Length: 239
Image (cartoon, rainbow, N blue to C red; front, side, top):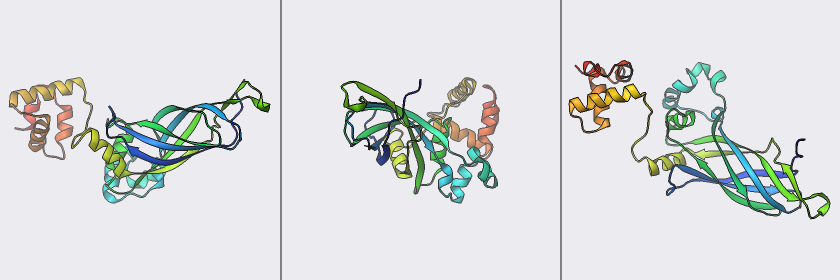
């Protein structure tokens, strides 16, 4: 049997900040929770899906070019520009009556295989990222009729809060953890080919290795040639 929904719960986002000292990249959302039932809430086990809503903002030409790999050519965006899941997170809300505020940790990644990272990287310095936080979970409160027992209700499925996250906050977070750098994941054979090329050329860094390949093949084609090359073939790229 399904649990009844908790009446009167409303959520809003007061602020989202970048955490400079976390072990891994993390944003923190300050949530305001309002309960209109008038009864003391013992605790809430809160779950949250954070979705990016790219259709809610305009894009300049540079951003359109950067997002081509995600959404296709601009004329297709009426069909392809759709909300997508960025992350899932959860927290436990301590007891309160009426209104409370709580921090919700939003763990992030700079992995370019993740759609959210690619989308955010393509945005310009200014502007915002339109996001929507969709809430679910379980509310533990005093039983009905004021009795001593503990009642259990669900957070209504339609509870959500919208927020426009400044791009500058995201860039600040990445600068804290990956200053002037980023991460891409490569196939094991491709890594072996790059390592072999680097050693035989006596190159001192991965940046210098990639620069050498791009300079030899041309910036427009170097990546494609590199991806297709076998471990012993990369020298052909720069001849």
